[in-house]
Length: 302
Image (cartoon, rainbow, N blue to C red; front, side, top):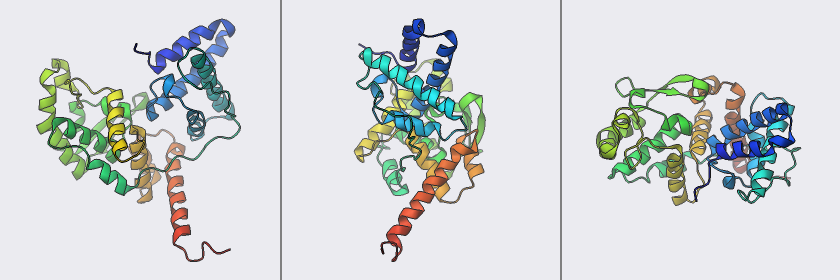
């Protein structure tokens, strides 16, 4: 039996609890759960069964990176706990969220893979096959440009201009940005377009052949779940738990570490608020402190 995806599960929850709450309360819970849906899309959570005990504190920390009031953050957390109680009672997940205290947010993000690890990851796909070239192109898009998962799979052929070395991206809320395509990504894009995509599109519909940039093995537009699978597959080879958001995270952190201005990084990532971008600078500061303590001869003296 195929279980419904997260948005359908959330709607079923709200419908089930609606007799117990006023309309205004239900609207508030719906707004809180919409925030969780955005977090889930970024982190690869597709259904209630993917929600572990680590998700609630991580979601709490994610919320704290936005200019939200404390009451708005707590509403989103209460909304998720409501959903978890319903999902647990419905047999859709193993944890009901009751053990999590909302007093201590997790405001630090996990450290991203190092540039050396990312290089090893990009060497894994088999470039002698159409699927391998497609997989490499996906990994390069996520890491080179820090694309969100839905941004990547929504790309059409017309969005990529190899002559001008640009990629036109439509992000959250319809926000648009024009991104540079550097030499490594340009070469991978050429190999994919001329050697892999024609083989993948043989059984595709006419509409797909004319529009979608990324194709699955059946020649149709690559769905978000397939992109998540691609990233996870290669991450597991290296013993890592990776997601498309993790590669976006690595891109941003490595650029911040290299000295890219936060305002430029904000435009690259498509953040509306600079506060969302500043967390990558905080990660870089933690890395500097860690390396300092390892290297300085007096750092371990009492």
